[in-house]
Amino acid sequence: MTEIVIRPARPEDATALGALGRQTFIDTFVEGFGIPYPEADLNAFLDASFDLEPTLKKLAEPNCAWWVADRDGELLAFANAGPNGLPHPEARPSHMELRRLYVSKAAQGLGLGTRLLKLSLDWMETHTDGPLWIGVWSGNDKAQRLYGAYGFEKAGEYDYPVGAWRDHEFILRRD
Image (cartoon, rainbow, N blue to C red; front, side, top):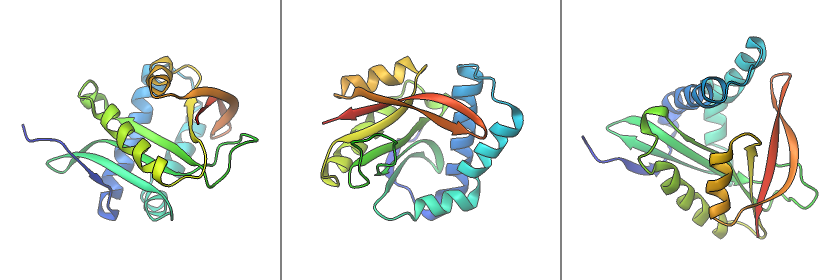
């Protein structure tokens, strides 16, 4: 098996990146956690988040960074960081947010999430004038423990839209 390379995402990764994001969301939140999203809401969210055009637009967004874990052209995981958009009274766009950290079901346990998290945190720290932020689903205890191990603490809560459905999320902050 060939070595897994972590590298910056490129526009030509958009199709594979969207497919990975879509499947990882389903594997994690629908199948893993059993969130009963109405089909129309789930499909609207997945299309808006992971179709080709939205993915290309997100990859080109200024002041953002994307990394992928690539094994022979197969994307196994990705991370995305950029200006904070979380709804917290102390949050500013000049602060950085870890927007997504997704590891495919097949690549769980390979340490890719931790490697991508460390890379993201290093990048975020060099591109911010304030604290770092993460939004995480309130029921994802594993992710909360991981982020807590890196100094993140709960700073608030909000509802994250998945179509008309609302996921209860925690806002985490590291000063």
